Length: 145
Image (tube, rainbow, N blue to C red):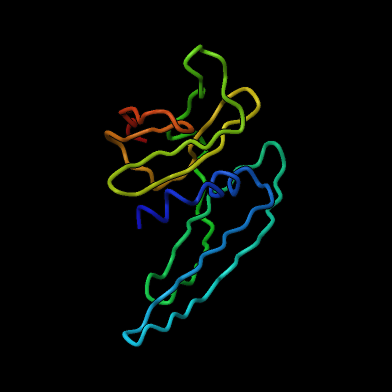
């Protein structure tokens, strides 16, 4: 599953309401040496206003390879927010930001000034791992609501 999440760079674009897609190919080889493969493609387009916020929960069925999406309630204030910055201190715009708490991954996309925020109500208080773009993850603390 971690390999799948590592390859899903499109998830940040999902939260940025940009056109995106996912293509997964599953191959299997039989004992007789024959190979069969199946490809599944998902495309979607989301639209939101500049002041609108949304949280989408993504589920993948490992057995059948299907996906399910569910809209979740949005917290009125961010559970965690910050500014994505490069090593030289300049803001990182339109970069994926990943928050991992208790084995669950939450994703956001930084804006043109590097600002990011997580509004999912299900984000629990406590210690979490935050990764901006391809930088090394950092430990952060999420306050109680």
